[in-house]
Length: 115
Length: 118
Image 1 (spheres, one colour):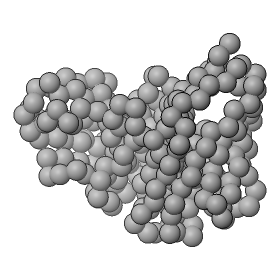
Image 2 (spheres, helix red, strand yellow; image 1 turned 180 degrees about the vertical axis):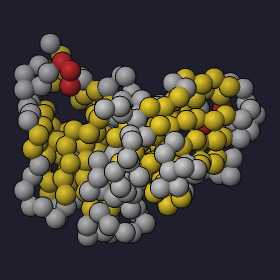
Image 3 (cartoon, each protein chain N blue to C red; image 1 turned 135 degrees about the vertical axis):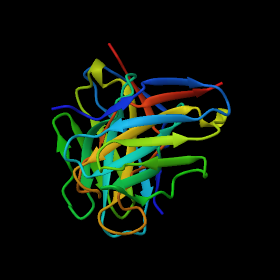
Image 4 (cartoon, rainbow over the protein chains, first blue to last red; image 1 turned 90 degrees about the vertical axis):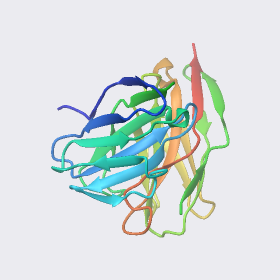
């Protein structure tokens, strides 16, 4: 079956612009996660959804970052007034339910470059 | 809060040899899971192996096995009969099993770049 997909695969934007990154989880997965990975580092948690609601958004760095999952499937990560420090690979993952018992399946990521 | 530490930035091994990647972690939770993920240059993060903390027996998946030392909070990955396709960045990660502040989110280490030489 289809895995987790993310679009676009690469995004270049100018400092100060607004961007949206999309994640399509595996069908039937109720939990969806966003992570950010800087070059040569491990992914860092941003936010996760259980269904339509954000169960934990403690990893969002500031109020320029926002994510939604209105119908409990596709999710969009939104970044306002982008800064050069936002440049990273944004990874999305989904699992059947939240918690360590359930494997998180990762997408290929979106590489965001802010110039 | 959970922390995961990988102290080996890079490792290399000859094809068909065995290599061990180290990981230590810290958690206040009694119920948690530990993972090793592989990330090749394609960026796709792939689960290699998983260990449930309450299970005494070390997890094994084909050529991959772990040495889980709960008291020492150590979780190393052993790759036997290394293959060229094993070349990748390897991440150790943890997650709580139920409830708690870390429920639902993976905490990753810094990664170890493994290169398998022919």
